[in-house]
Image (cartoon, rainbow, N blue to C red; front, side, top):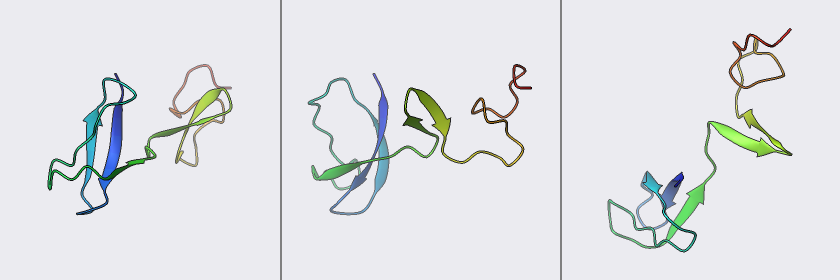
Length: 73
């Protein structure tokens, strides 16, 4: 049950919602508008077969997204 980020096209409000199925109707909690768009999460993006941080610190290793992984050499 993933949490998705949305933006309402009517009022511009951004919000998160827990979605229980692929056809779940999402409604803006501010204006109750049904015309919403799903946003790309700022914390991670899937590239190929692994997840990569959207913005890594300059000193982070290239093998993981945390930057403090003990397996990085």
